[in-house]
Amino acid sequence: MNSLAKLAIDAHGGLERWQQFDAVSARLVQGGVLWQLKGQAATLSETNVAVGLRREWASHSPFGATGRRSRFEPGRVALEAADGAVLEELQDPRRSFDGHTLTTPWTDLQLAYFAGYAMWTYLNTPFLLAWPGVMSEELSPWQEAGESWRRLEARYPDSIATHSAKQTLYFDDAGLLKRHDYDVDIAGGSPGAHYVDGYTEVSGIKFPSVRRVFVRQDDVGFRQEPVIVSIDLSDIQLT
Image (cartoon, rainbow, N blue to C red; front, top):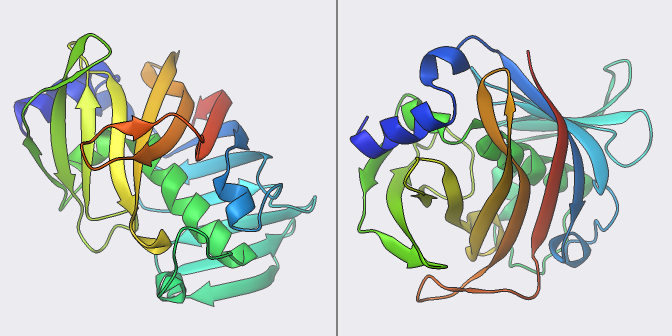
């Protein structure tokens, strides 16, 4: 790892501590215009999520109807009953987004895929910088809100399902994540500027509890309205 990646991982609790756990879970309250654009306004407005830390998987429960949950892995996504019975499933789900734009509606399984890989990415960042095959390089600093943030360009291998192969992470002087830029490939490459705040410490690991995603502009600025996605996390637990 380069020095900025190491600073960031250490600032969030350290790799040694992180590797003591297998999963993280949280309560989510979500909003923003994305869900309406996708025809999924209320499905995941209040739910719980769990994600893996040693391999890529995620599950949201409830997923819409009470007693229904999702199961995401990069090559498969499914909806399950409370007893684990498979209700619907989709193999190679990323191919189903071919030709999509920001306003193309999503099926329930497509929503489960997006929400699964997105929350897996968010809750594993910045520790993903130590993941096999992930490469990173420090960029020039970025000035915003009277602060200077260090920037790291991360490149993810094809084996990881995430927004885009190239993403940019912004860190303050202490190494805490402040902003996360990416293009949402499965929504026509829509550019996002994802801000985090409200850090809380859980079992020695620091997590942001407030997340807001805006439309990123060509100059790396962003439009404050509308909020594309809002995510408020509580009851974060490591197991």
